[in-house]
Length: 266
Image 1 (cartoon, rainbow, N blue to C red):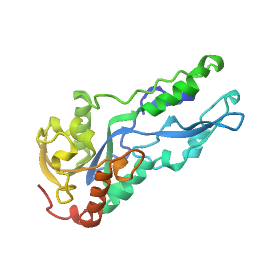
Image 2 (image 1 turned 180 degrees about the horizontal axis):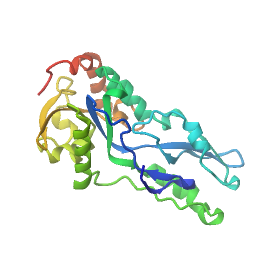
Image 3 (image 1 turned 90 degrees about the vertical axis):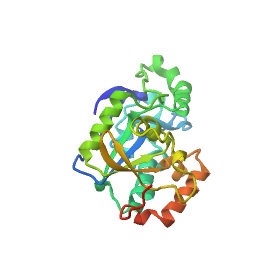
Image 4 (image 1 turned 60 degrees about the horizontal axis):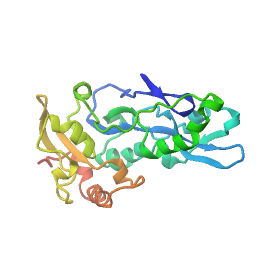
């Protein structure tokens, strides 16, 4: 994994890629990689940060395995407190949601899926940025802590080079179905090859149209596209859309289990 920048307390931000590169049935495209989160506690026993991103997740759509061990490996000066693993809602929830609400309902496991993100590394969201500026940055000079350089969530989630790299992975995967998680994979990948659709709602917002497969040609390769809501919406991970949650639940109950074995296409 390529090292591109640094988390609080010095762990490198790394680029992630699919490890098992054997042929797959589906190719799953998300937005950006998550991180391992720690609870930062001061020497007075008080919580400094509830969930601070301190390391890259070890694999695509990580499910939180060995989170405590990863956090324990992060070196922190005793003068600034200690780190404990954050709750499971902060470590691997998107990976758990992928298995529970996307792959399993389709009759798939991780062995059947090639996983990818538009941005293949962690990004610092506004909440994390505020936590770093409030709690970590004032201590950098005093305790000679590593400077933080985690990239911010980008305004543009892909460029031509990244889209070509993703296309190369799709071809390598030999997958016949491309699963897109939410608006961004549609906006920053699919529309450059199939301009009909710009966002998830363009495929339809009612329960009958949601979660249908669509026959497309991407750079001359015919395949099926299955656009679905992002795991954040489906599993209600923080602020999320009630509409997309309910629509996906209806899809799970009524259509998902038979979808890949049918000709349910538009």
